[in-house]
Length: 338
Ligand SMILES: Nc1ncnc2c1ncn2[C@@H]1O[C@H](COP(=O)(O)OP(=O)(O)O)[C@@H](O)[C@H]1O
Ligand SMILES: [Mg+2]
Image (cartoon, rainbow, N blue to C red):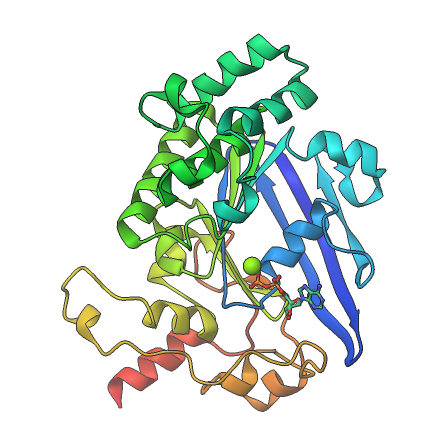
């Protein structure tokens, strides 16, 4: 068992708005080991982005407020660090890649200038050293003819290549943890698959831990060791990737799985695709119990009254945790005989 790298403990974040406090993250706890890839999935608004932004000290305060918790990175609580210390970690030991490289890359600066800057700040390289490393980084993310392309501007790269540049920047200071938030969402499916394959190769070469955030469960299948399903600012299920796909225990996870197109051609896979009915809750007025209960056909009165704890799922793989008062496999078996 490798060492824990990141230990998130009961993290809670709220935003003060005219309509009241938006409870964006509501007690999120998990551990990430060195070299582990964690896929975090959930519909839009489930608190995926806000919880990582909060860790990195990047939520606007106000209106944002961290209302509780700790985020231990290599044993140090990121939430207790001064902004200056946090800056050293951001883009240093923790690299990140966000959606839409067109808005994250500066259109008025060459790619070289944008890669070189973090190298000079974090690694203290001189201009020549930083440029040499920038070229190596473009090679690393498989951009052909890297030396010549360094002096081009973002608009001269395709969408997929821009995302590769963003990954190069994310990796520039040899992070122990790379956080990618919807990093392939803006790309078409083929390019998305290429980026995912690239990240898998880079992970084998560099061995960093990864948090890969996406609303698309299909994307995490090929990349994750562990999958974590978030809803309404909570973790509803978490476990080894194969076990999550083969043996989901939360009705929300099942809904996400059933809304995936199945390319295997199997009979089960040809069932009609269905979207999860209803909409995520209003984060200002969360329901008292399981937040997914109002959309869950399997919900019991207890689900509507009391939040289930996240705990080991009975008979599932070790480390497969679920927050549910109902026994999903049993309910599905009963449904199948009807
Ligand atoms: N600056 C903000 N002010 C008010 N509410 C916000 C702000 N940023 C995010 N939120 C709210 O926090 C919740 C979680 O958002 P987010 O983490 O971005 O979701 P996800 O990344 O899972 O799609 C949402 O309800 C969103 O509306
Ligand atoms: Mg997001």
